[in-house]
Image 1 (cartoon, one colour):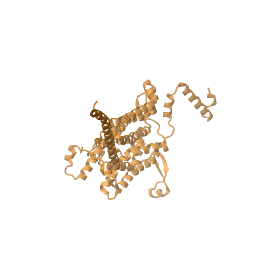
Image 2 (cartoon, rainbow, N blue to C red):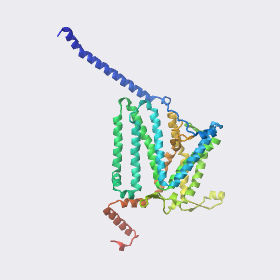
Image 3 (tube, rainbow, N blue to C red):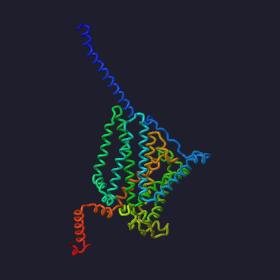
Image 4 (tube, helix red, strand yellow):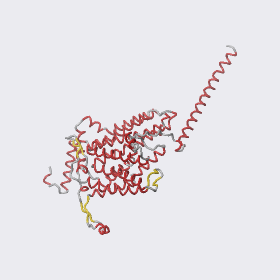
Length: 452
């Protein structure tokens, strides 16, 4: 081998090492640049958030032509008014159709609200092309709904489940199956992680889970409230709707003083007018509903007819009672006693929360929309925006009602307890029977001679 050839062979490893070092340095520089860009993404102000495409105007052409001569302010007034009446009429129709249709309505609203929030996240970070983001978001929605609705089936449809062996397996291992489904999604998320998108992918993972907390959990509580009796579903929801409408009316005609910077159109006049209107509405509406078993009885599933039934002996909450009027008011009203349903007293608490605290759900949503520079969550309802724009206050209300019922109203439920006893093994049922009989004998309710 010549000296020149030996020198070339000797220098080749050195050149390869230099090329590898240069490649590593370039790769390192790219990673540093990427980290810097992601760091800048963390530190950027709200003004640097990517714009979300504005929603299109979905107002029907017939309304546009009919209202073309009006100013933008009055045009929006009429569009909101007409669509509000249409939605309220549809809501009454669904109430007439029964509890099951109301549950389907709640589920539909939940899915639509979830879709609107997830879509905003997808549009904001669409340019980064996050892998599997939308698919995993909907998968997690399916998993969480499977868990919550499975819990509902286990609680309220026990006798129905007991008659079907395939459902018994699903209910018995429901929580394990739910966990396995979620764990599958979790592993899929980990496998989808891409080196240049780590931070954004975790942003959107958190976005998805917070959205699930806001929508699915609250809708589950709404259905739990419905099972306590339709009145616990209708009064809170109607109070929020009433407050929303009356606050808008008072603010439209009398509003002068801004209420909060997050919502410049909200005024103190509308806020106060909405409060008093909602309290009066809740009191009168409760009086009407409390007179009918259809609204006050707990919703139960009849396994013999395969239908939901609302038949019972109304509890003391829904039986007319006389109350003494405070001395100070007796001179003004001229009454010493007044007859009313005890539930009407609870309606004050529900209406007060709906009008004083409920709007903060709307303020929260306003802050969220301002953060991403959008006017509405979507353009589903002309003049109103998206479904989430109409139900942002309802989610706070659902949680409050559930907490209120469990804290101040709900007692032991014999019907639910009986359903649980019926699914026990025969020897377990016999043990419960003997223990209960012994207890009743000791309390003197049963005669000792009845002992077996």
